[in-house]
Structures are given as structure tokens and as C-alpha cells.
Length: 547
Ligand code: GLN
Image 1 (spheres, rainbow, N blue to C red):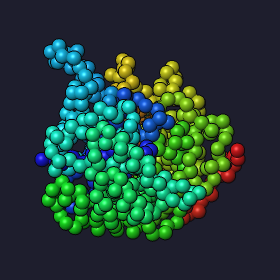
Image 2 (image 1 turned 120 degrees about the vertical axis):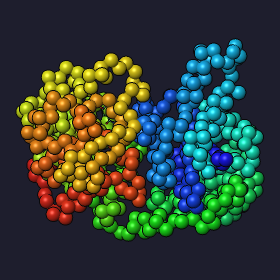
Image 3 (image 1 turned 180 degrees about the vertical axis):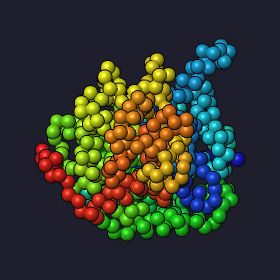
Image 4 (image 1 turned 90 degrees about the vertical axis):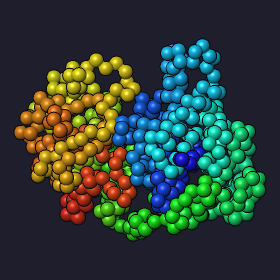
């Protein structure tokens, strides 16, 4: 039987509830237990796929093509598991299902209510995680903060779960925040007490409180929280902000949280966790390293969360190459206006990540041109590959006409276009090529060398594809199609032969990178950037205009 650990948040959002839960997942896995994860998001969107990155940050894509919350990325990276469709459930999805059933007549004339119909549907989804994974432990996180109107049905479902499956099979973990008052130089526990009171009002008494803080937490604060919130002192866990994200599991291990969880849930597992590899990784991360500067050229650069997995992948690849990756955030919209080029001085590589819509795309094309002309390593992710192909077609045809039909529907040179069977799509949500697809690598290419195997599987999230009518033209101009779908119809990876490293993938490699297993393409890209850095090549400075 699967045991459930429920995570709720108090005081403020963004305290790192997802990371904390993911870290506990790693500690349980290190004790030989199997772990499943689910994020319950109280917003009304059916999934975050249609939400602006400004609102929601990155959309994380699973193997089976679910468009999910970025917290799932933390879970995959920390626990090293692959999540699936049931791992992210929203209010929108719950209601859509209940309403569809009501229209179908399944409720036989009953009045449909939040309790029990919506809460039952939420619980059905929670049980589904247990059923589809058979895991020893399911970590279930509710998004937002206790007290939010939207999260009430989820909280109620969690409350009911205790009587449904029993005390020994459920554990409520409340993650709060202790604010620091600079004037009196102290942390305050009052907001935590209030949020626990709020939680109790819903009928949930937390078993564990994880107190996040940016400063060391004195033991008397722990005692105070224990006393006021009726939680055992050893179940009040201090979680001070870590300088190294991936060190959180080790910090959490020192608090004996995992031991307490095992005891409380009567779980049989290894007493001592096997964290040797993880510790060795943290040691590697801690080693002082030379820096390397990589530019990320995008249109959501103000909000770094929009590129969460890209940034993490660069970080993983940096550690593997003994480099501290410094990211230079470059706004593609600026480049079009002739601004922002000063940021290119000193770059050792450029990443053009995924994106949608016309805004800022010309700036990305200019960035690709700059990387090609200056022989600076370039990694294009999805839109970044499309941009690289458009740029080369513009050079080959000596014209600005080549484009994607996403940005210019009537272009005379649709280098990137929809496939013939895609032309009638009307819905925006869930109509993209999503999830894992196989990709065959062309021997002798940079892609094949990076992966070291003939076939790989990678995750997609896009609508447009490379237009095969332009393959020959681009091949004549130095492009190599180094990754194709098994039937050869879809371009998955393109690279330039006369460039140290200019490679783009139609898929998103960033979703599969792990701290202890950097993605081969990111690793090869940073390797190329290191080579460039070590050779000390200078760019054609004339290209680097100042603002
Ligand atoms: N907008 C492009 C497409 O839909 C690229 C998508 C992406 O970068 N994820 O094909």
C-alpha cells in the first residue's frame, strides 16, 4: 500500500515547498524506497500549457507529453524519476472531468457539489498516482498557500484522505516561512502560528512543520513553534536557505526528517541512506571553478523562472566541465532595436531557448547570425533550432524573406512550417507535438559524438516543423541534419559543419538533464565553449556595438 505525504504551504508562496518535497523524495529514495510525486495546482487552467511564462514560469514537459508546473522539473532532477500525466492536476482538469461526466448523465440526476463530487474527483486523481506507479510513498504537493480560496477543495480532499486510508498511511507536512526583522535582528514565528491555525480551521493538524528561513533558526524558535502548533519538537524542521540548491537533501538529512517520516509512516527501509554519489556530486559542485559566460537570448529574460530547466542544464553541464556557468540574460527584443549588443562581449557561448509568437524573434535570428559569423558555440532549443535554420536560409538566398509561418503566414520561403496534417488546428491547448519521440542520429556528426549512441528519445513541445523542401538548400550551405525521426521525415537536430559548435534541436533536451547526469548536448555545448575560452579567440569587435 502506498503511503501519502501531503505538502501544504503557509505564510508566503515561493518558499521552496517543491524543492523541499523533492529533497525529501531523494532521501527516501536513498533508503531504497520507490517514490511517486504529484502537484495539485489550484488554478482554473486545465494545464499550464496555455499560460504566459511571465505568469507561470517554465512549462515542464513529461515523457508522456503532459505540460506541467515547473516544480515537476525539481522533482525529476532531485529524485531522478520520470513523471507522467497524473503527476500534475489542476482545478480546471478536475472540473472539466466532473462536468463532462455530468453532461454524460453519469450522476443520475444528482446535484453536483464541491463536496463530495469535486473532492472525490481530486481523491481519485491522488489514488491514481498510487495505482499507476505502485510506489512506496507518494509525495503530494498542493500549490499556493493555505487560506487561498482556490485551494480549499484540495485541502478538504487531503483532510478526508486521513480517515479514508488511516493515520499510519498519511502525513501532513506544512512548509512555512520565518521572516527576519532587520531592526530587531530576529526571526518571527507568529506568521507560522497563524498559518497553522488556518490549516487547523480546515481540519488538518500538521504532523511536520518545515520552517524556511534566510537566517539560522535558534532552537528556542523551534521549541516555540512546537509548543504553539502542537507538533513534536523533532518534527519542527529548520530549513535555512542553502547557497547550493542541490545541497538541500543533505541539509535535510541532518535534521533527521526522513527518519521521523519512516517511523511515523511505519515504513520499512534501510536505516542508513546511500547518499555517497550525491555527496560526491556536492563536493564537485563546491570545488572552486573558473567561470564561463553563456548568453541566454530570449524574450522572457526578466523572469529567470521562464528558463528554469535551461539554466539548470547549463549548471549541470558546467559542473561536468569544471566551469561555473555565469548566465548573461539577453533580451532578444533589444537586439532588433540595435540595443543590448554590448552584452555579447566576453560571451563563450549562446543559447537560444524555446519560445512562441513573433515578438523578439528577429533578435534571436540576429543572435544566431552573430554566433555563426563569429564562430561562437551556439545551442538552439526548439525555436532556437528553427531560428538557426531561418538564418542560414536567409544567407543562402541573400534575402530576409525566409521565415516560419508562425511569424509570417505568407512568407515566400516557409523554412519552418506546419506539416500538411496540422493545418486545421483550431485549439491552442494540448494540440502540439508533445512528449517523447525517438530520434536517429547521423553517424559522424557532432550530435552523434555527443550522445555516443545511434538512437535517442527526447521530449517535444512545439507545433511547427522544419520544411523538408529546404533541406537540400541548407545542406548545400553547410548544414547537416544530424538527427531525424525514424522514418526520416522530421528534422530533429540540425548542425553546421564549418563551425566549432552550432547545433539546434527541435526537442527540448533541458527536460532530461540531471545534476548527476548532464544532458549530452548541453555537455558538448559547454565543452565547446570551454575550448573557445581556452583558445582565447577574440570576436570581430566591430560586431559588438555598444548601447
Ligand atoms: N513556436 C515554435 C513552435 O511551436 C517553437 C516552440 C518552442 O520553442 N517550444 O514550433
